[in-house]
Each structure stands twice: as C-alpha cells, then as structure tokens.
Amino acid sequence: MTAYVVNEIVVTDPEVFQTYVVQVPPTLPPFGGRYIVRSGPSQAIEGEAPGRLVILEFPHRAAALAWRASPAYRAILPIRDAASTSRVYVVDGYAG
Image (cartoon, rainbow, N blue to C red; front, top):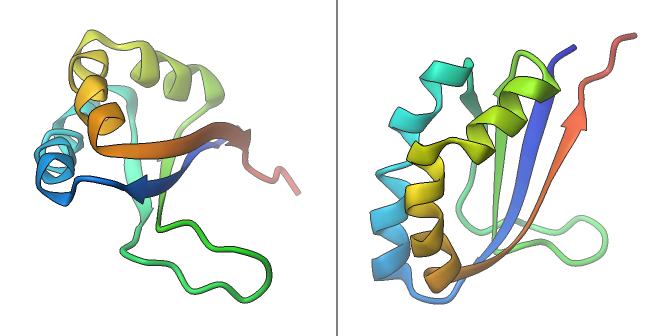
C-alpha cells in the first residue's frame, strides 16, 4: 500500500534551509519516492497552517522508513534540523 511522509516545516534560517532543499531530491529515487506536495507558505482554511508542507509518496511504508533511515538522507538531516523545526510522520494511503 502506498505510504506518504508528511513534513510540516517552519523555516528559521532560509539560506541554510535551501542547502538542504537541493540535496533531498537525489535521495528519493532509490526508494521509489517522489514529491506530491512541496509548498511554500500554506494557507489555513481551518486551524493553523504550517509554514511549509511537504508530502512525499513511496510505494509502501517500508520504503518510506528505509529512505528516512538511509545514509544519504541521514547525512543531510542535520542541515534541516539546524534551519527549521518540523513535525514529520508517515501515513498509509487509502486502500478503498
């Protein structure tokens, strides 16, 4: 079943954060990952919106978790952490 990694991001250092942003895309293909949403500032319809929202799609939860734990992604994660605050979670798609 398809799985999604959802990242709600508040950027605190845009210049440093940009160095993270350009390094993420090459880490996705080995795990079948791709961007579904990669937004700038979000607009709230109800409640509070995160500063940015990123949704990644993977073929299944195991692939999403393997990407997150991969050496390539783990190497750049400290950049994100230094330049933003995030709430990140994985969810399964709807099997209908």
